Length: 245
Image 1 (cartoon, helix red, strand yellow):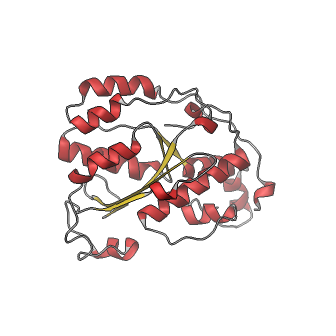
Image 2: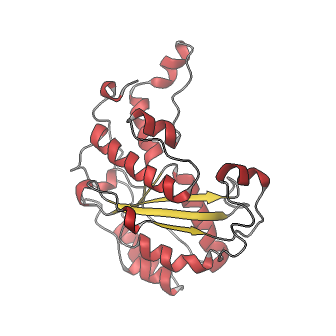
């Protein structure tokens, strides 16, 4: 369905976690110096309007979908706000996962054994990653991947707890189409359910097609999708705590 026929606004969830308070608590418990500094940098108030929020889009490529068994093989991020995507500040790291690459994951993301032969371990990326995320609200497409894999990575390697606020563009897109009652209507009409994949979601907003499964490119694609979602379905003056989780 064309975007012009989608609702201009959908009901928002109740305010999410009080991340500024949680960061203070986590800073007290953290032992790793870069992680403690990340928490000590603090987080914006939940009442901050979207127009004033510093965001960073984040994407991970992994060896599989099970965060307890699989591991991260690349990290991509790009900072942005509702006016601009800061492509020159984008970052991308290839890292050596703990389990070996599987042939199935190589087919998906195209990262091979030779690509990561000289790559650092994820431990060496933690500090610059935390510096890039400091003070920003993370935006992802499907929060279970980035949240769960990073939590497991910090737990396995540093025995530390890593928490951060994030906004999920897949969740926003699902809310938009749930408002339209796409599920039961399409089933009655014998049609396929609407796809919530990143590329399919971008297509509905007439955003350009990008190569999939490259962490930095997918991060930029997610940033652009979120900006489009805000312009079509949200308001720039709503508080970030209605979206973050």
